[in-house]
Image 1 (cartoon, helix red, strand yellow):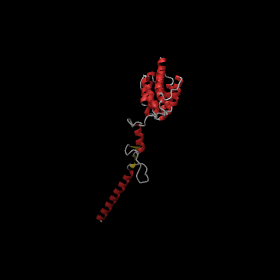
Image 2 (cartoon, one colour; image 1 turned 90 degrees about the horizontal axis):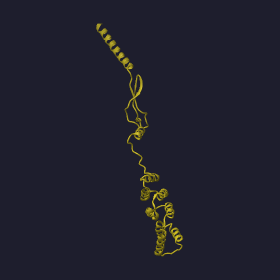
Image 3 (spheres, rainbow, N blue to C red; image 1 turned 60 degrees about the vertical axis):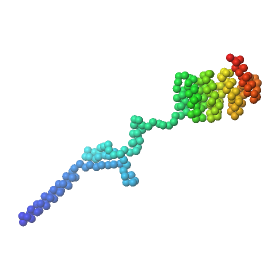
Length: 220
């Protein structure tokens, strides 16, 4: 009889212990971990991990940042890669225009770098070159005036300015143009020289040169 009572008491104590353990587990603060929303392949989008406690939700810095966050941070980070696009024709010309306080140096910089410009940017560069170059260095523009790769619009700007220069500057270059039949300004150059000399000496270029030299000496 006593043995039976002892077994019942033991079972009662064991059940009470189990019940108290379950009760204590329900009362303890729960802690959950959440990640980004699940995507179609069963994985989760990366993002900050959060913890849920009795006091509410709090974000902590862990997990892998999303590509969008990385891109935004990179664009703002010190030392981020600068824009590597090539400068425009206007930007290149601005560099030449501010390259020196000497107008002649500016003009020569434009002339030497002219080949790097696109055809649509050459006319503006030509207008700046003729505006800055001095009389004694005008012959530096000769390669541009004779180069078929230079836009005709840019060459016309140089040619029109040439007509306003002194006889000593103008005549030698006009004679060269006249002796280049395939040049777009060859006929114009002949007409200009005929007006100055009052005569057309045909293909006798030696006579042209002699008469032009006489005229240059007479105008000194």
